[in-house]
Image (cartoon, rainbow, N blue to C red; front, side, top):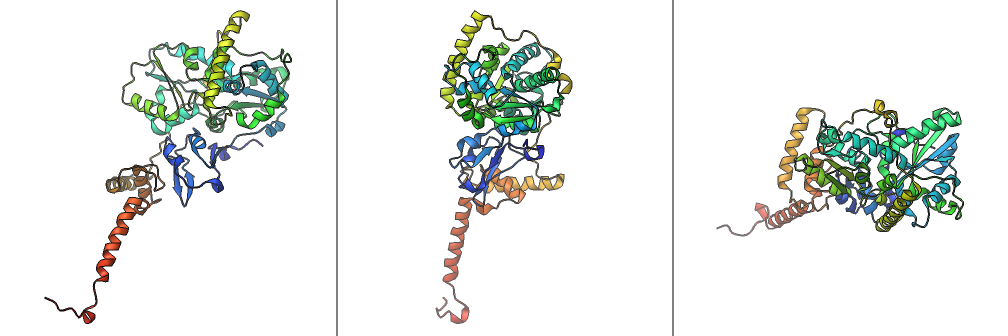
Length: 447
């Protein structure tokens, strides 16, 4: 069954009985959204951006991403798959894209429409947008939902730099839903649009859309969830002639730099892996990248091919994708396959867009006076902490622990160094007390 919005505010979830209480996740989370309390990890919803970094680093596999499944297709009369270009990187280049598309039809979908088509259209729209002289520089890609949420949470002053154009998958979903409703003579609500995704953040973006009131996508199915069934359903060689593919330009979006290539942006910066993106955004805030025209920021290492819901090793996937893109470019030149050359504003959903709002994470209290008091507690507490950011206290840094203490969810004794000081002081006091006797029992002459 398709999950309700209230159940899917975050795709990334904790499997409590697997959690060993190690500190790997709290040290890797880019927004300090995780704490260890009572021996178990706890995700702070207001901070989480669903980047999936905790899924990758957890040795106990105690973090997971909630997505839909193939069983959910039965709730709709007509089902369309939107495969992400990164899906193709999970297969050796010897498997043609046409074969993979036909395999998707064989596992239960009525139609398949590549997200790569949406990428081609979005590339044209971004190209036009960058020609404007009235936009903040550098312009920042809004294609990666985890990066957009990172900006909402930590860098709200950069929201105006985000390109106000839907991600390729939203554009693809909008186009194919309208076409299918007309061709199949169905109500749009009877059509299920399913994104086959490498990304946990996209599940959250569908349930809690970025820049629109409602997503055009019905649900999200992780690549890892259907890979086994898809592998078995691939047609034999020569049995995929009816499945047509997009151009290499759109498919190239799967890798870091693919978007920039498609957009043909001059003086552009490509940054991938969420911690690198975090550092880059700090540079933008400080005004150090004002000369850059465009920034392609991707939460996953290598781009979408390194997503937490993929199955292939990131480096192997990148190697396969590079070979595939090179072969596709040669084939496209010979066969005359061209990317989209024009687009309509209706395809971009310009009228449906809403302003992206910030999501402040350091809201200590609704009452301004109480909040100021807690800030004072934080500052004083931080001065007493060792500043080692070891994570042994269950908070990712000394600053985070000071905040937790001010909020009442931790104590100074949670710091092992402060605890050691308290124990040492207590031991000294006990020794001093042990040497003292009540006056009636003290027979030692006083000098």
